[in-house]
Image (cartoon, rainbow, N blue to C red; front, top):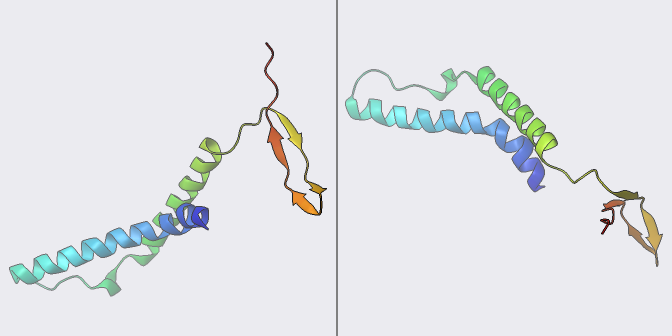
Length: 98
């Protein structure tokens, strides 16, 4: 669940959260100064905010794919059943030569 949150949900919502924070600060500034109309959230560039979020999520996904993960060196051990329990597949490191 954490991976999904940080890899997909957070990057998509981040541009919208930044825009909402800017909108709140701008509204306070305009109200204090008493000049003009404060910006409305309905006038937000929603399409561009969502596009920026999707691009950010894409970059995050590629970054995790390129920088994360386990080592590919070693011997793959397929999943098996031992004593009625499923042991998931994994990679065991190769023994080092001395």
